[in-house]
Image (cartoon, rainbow, N blue to C red; front, side):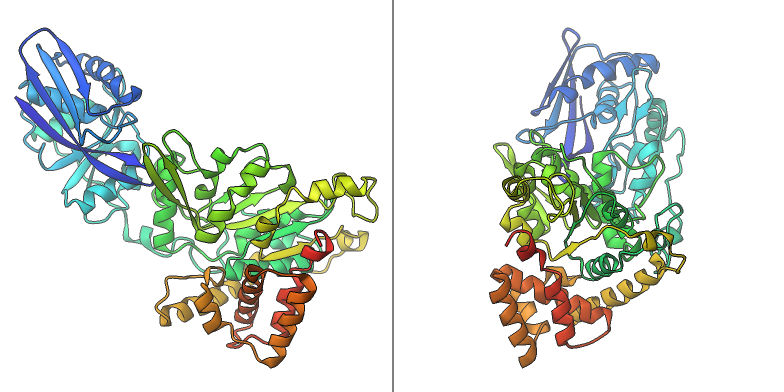
Length: 515
């Protein structure tokens, strides 16, 4: 007898269907797994047999052949323990499993029959929904994230016996349903701040840096901060997320999908509600940033999708790791090609980087490092990578007067309101142009020519800046994008000369440090 069960496995950011076929024939007791399984899948037969005996079932007498179709795609992970167990019981006639054709299933089995969670439950549920399946059996710990998929039955199971009774019709298990308010605006109103989230009101002084970060948040621009240790670069970066707009539902789904695949969602959590903030240590490798190499999965830059990637002490990162950022910063995604196939992961993030002006951290005029040492230190940041930093700002050391000042400073909520208003202007602009863009930083050359027109005075100002700062064509476009964001913050339909001048000023470090 042959039993067939629908299952699935994560492949990159998505999941693809796998049909688990189990045939039990006469002969000596032997279990064979075919269909290009990896080590974790091959070991499933030992977990399954232990779980069967622990749950009061017998191991089928004879030769059990388990085929994972399609056979030309490598299968990895413990996703198939539950469907293999159900298939063996059904093929050997130990259960009827009347509902076996109505529900797909995934799950790892413990030796005592308990069902452990798997990674990528949201991607798996989405794939089954697209295939028109009625629902799926899933580990109870994964049920909330899978239930994000609406009009799809998510049946939580904790033990092999629960799954058997449900499929046999001997017991009913209620499908997990999320309340409608779970799908409302994820982060609430524009002034909402998550409990414990740092606030810009805590930052003394640094008005120039705050202004630059406000522009960065409004248009989704990458930013480089240079300043001595202790001037507040990290403090500012950690508060940057508090002025970003709330996640919309589509952004939350994409972010949740990535976090689900990485297995870092909190237990019982549905949608990710806050924009991610990733701050990898400078010892991270290029593989750590891009994603695992042998069987690719999301790296740090994909974990920061729709959020912030903060690289502190930028020159301390390896040159190879930094250069891997160039293509994702342009395309908003990363593609990893291997002999076994190609994987594409989303990587639409805002890069905030911080560094010291010299190896010893002091300003150039006060540094004890030699000119050669300073040049070597700065040269760790390549020209092409520097060219992709829309805003380049110098963060000065705080004075005693700044530290002791009792003057009130703007809160994150106040700044965030202006940012949200600027983002709404961009949303309407790109929607009217039938563009898929959401922020100014992603404008194409065609969109720049359409939305970033300058008057004669502005053209002359930009021409002089191009010659003086020796900017590339990419630098020219990025200045216009930043100027457009500054104009949006002021709800101005046209880019004025003062908007353009401020955008040019934010690129001065090209010449001051690397010129």
